[in-house]
Image (tube, rainbow, N blue to C red; front, side, top):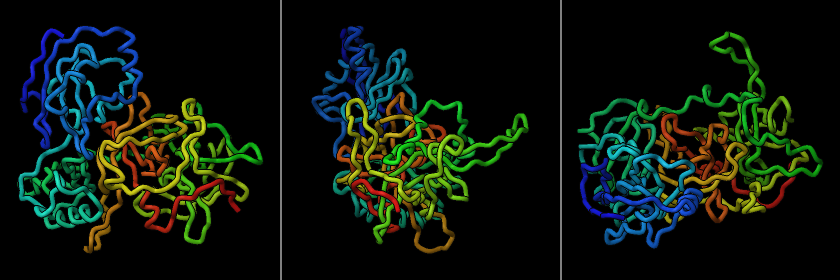
Length: 452
């Protein structure tokens, strides 16, 4: 290292509203190849300190960046700009990159002015919920979220979703807006706004078509033996339906492919599994792994509104267990043992979750935000919502749409949510809270269960 210059310049990068960004410009020599290889194959790089404090991003204590800056060669600058740790380098290193450094998701950039997280426009209107202080005194919970949603209704601006990123809010509106009218702080945290045009939902018709010969995924048939055991993470498919190709105008038989979810029981003790609603046709037929080479294993008996969760009754004799597939490092897999609250202290921004789908294998994601999607019911009454999280997944194993329905668990095996979709423009993924199952009378089910 030839020199280190510590500066504080909000103009140097796109700055975080919650932090005074700390910029460190350095000139580092190359590190030995074995060191670089070790770092490139590490998912989580631990520092002597954490860059995460109770679900909020922070700079190194006392401005001490020396350890951080010793990890990578040729660093030009480093910045904590929530929700990321941004490392500026002359050329991007080969993937896969570490998922986290010091607890924060890592991003490399060759552009000092790159906007790696599109927050939107900051509100310039009044403060809302001034009696609450999410910045330093309280944590987000369902009561605070409810108050935030209700308070926003007085501004007559319909919204699609509202999320809290552990230091700031991001709200997606259905239409264009005037930032001078909209709150600039809710519960002492800044608020940023974007429209659905800036963050469109993915197009299922374009993303979910399954061409049988074109996928590198685990499409094994797991019901070939009489004593077969099914589990979360197997490939599921809809019945066949016909589409017309826009280019050649020919018709093709296709099917939608998703992933099996968790084993649940209703208040009567009946067993079911969860699936992603959008992956199946109106007939409700569920095939494994697909309708051409596989078998019919069950039928959808209920769809939970606005959640993309459906409830499936498997065929008599089939067995299911809430244990994921094993890996080389964890041959017994993960036992899913409960449903986790989507709020602190149980779940915070930057917590690491795991999922195991036939399209990614086992991979990890990091919670960026917790919040809700608003239900548009046009009743004029109290606004309702469905709890969700935004996640950022490790590089090199980004989920695709067919991961929909896959359960995400914490390090103790509790189900936090079910994978819903990947953002159309960004590498963020939407997860619906597993707690929504409880709202409809379903609980996680332990042990190996046989359907009757």
